[in-house]
Length: 548
Ligand code: SF4
Image (cartoon, rainbow, N blue to C red; front, side, top):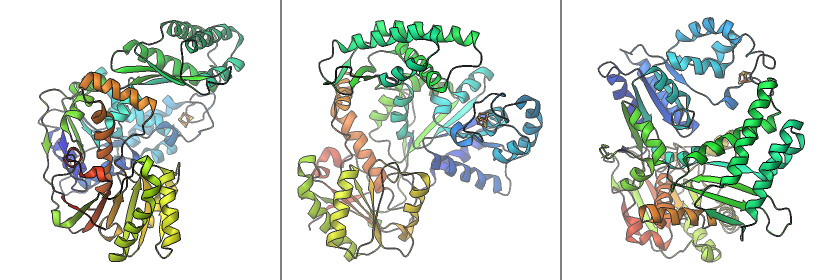
């Protein structure tokens, strides 16, 4: 595990030595795994730097793209009767594979379309023929991960690089959880083929029986629901039989629900104290209320550890892997894991960090905090005009502050993140941060702009962080807290504090990107002054209390 500040070249710094180790360690492949699309782009850029070097090694680098992004016919199904790129795929595959194998950086769309084959399935084929595969985490860590499966089946010796590894906790939980929605069950019951209706009906009956014991809209249990699981298993068997007799398949709604049931059954088999089973009802008052069932993974360590130890070598790196025991406990890194904390190349003089302890951003104090936050932003902006980011815990909070700032200080340009922002509007948001620009971008902490964005030099000179990043206080998080307390004896820290401060440090990390950058970070909340919070902040920061 390597903790190293953002912007110092972790991507090329991990990839290059691993490539050097390919021959002496007789490695078959390097898997570079990322949490988000921008991470893949950085890895491909790093690979390109290496490929462009004077004595470039003869490498093939492949990017795996998710099916929904790589698909050329999203309105079709993946078989020859529906999609022209699936029809005759294996007839044309050898020529397409041959053409793709001539490339160093395997941009497969062009090759695939030249040979009339599906780019997504061609990339899966080329995984066998690439030296470096850049892919999302799920290609290696998911239950049915392609890269892990290939490595096992072929006895490959692989090296695994896990980029921005702090994300693996939450992504791991998602991969090893399963949920079912009763509204979906009701809709597929109506359209299901006649022979399947009875078994779906039985699932619904057992599901409703669970509601009898439920007293509140949300309830968590230590055990998985046995009778419902039996009904689900019988239902999956009936659908399996039906598919044997009807190879043309099911409609997409029932097919997706079938996959959800299979995942639910699979997770149920693994259910132990590292999971919760919970039922969320939509509306307790309504007579026929519907619910959502979730087998919720709380600690993914038991599933991640075997994937890490199956590799010849695994390097997990990020700017925020503190505290070490938290990530070791949740990611299941083996006891002999080497841990390095790379010194920051930045100096404390480059970044003024202020704790603004006169303001509380707690929910009950929110209204009272609006005006002081607005005046703080305006004062800083007047003292040093330029580009800033301001982070909040929610869109509501963000809008309230943005609105008041616009009223009180109309000369300050501001732009705001919106809910569900697509890739283009996100890029447009970032494009406003120009070298000669001046304005304040409002964003939600832990969202699209809280990590993985690079605004060097004058493109970003400061950040206001008006939240500790604590997860919302809700019944699910409270259950997680209880479970964390039972397993690790640190419920609040493991559920709220550590993940929250990690987001704060990531967001603050947007400000200083090079050794020439100068900037300011305002940590707005009295709790930032508490020693247990301060000790989670980067050691190279020199923190002052701000008076305003
Ligand atoms: S075969 Fe490929 S192009 Fe065709 S529908 Fe499936 S993913 Fe899309």
